[in-house]
Image (cartoon, rainbow, N blue to C red):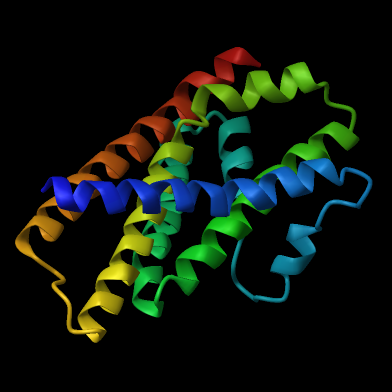
Length: 192
């Protein structure tokens, strides 16, 4: 089992970096107009922006539906990270980079709209521990891709220890995402 943990930790750090680099790059270039994600989304008929629905639900006091919306959205992102490993990690890398960039873009948009850094941190820090779950799922996707590469190269891969570790990581990231969704929908509103 120790033999599996060391590479997974490397892939976990790598996943965090794939998220963090676009995030930091976007924050460093604050003069660029934020991406208009809502008009970009109009290219895909019938798909609503999850954040738009969540804000509406929370403003109406519908915390239960907001919780479900946040939970399913975040779990879908994590699932994309894990399943991105089937594309030799390309899907995972794209999802991590995209989410890091969009998170920074929302922060830049909030700041450019007049929100203070203090308020941005106050609203985001209580539930941003969901990123740990997101990074764990990204590490799982990259590690899954590595196992596929080992299989192709006819090296030892997909052992029972690998499946046990992946199962444990799934439980951990699902718990983190569940807890973060609860905090975001029921507790964060008290900070406003």
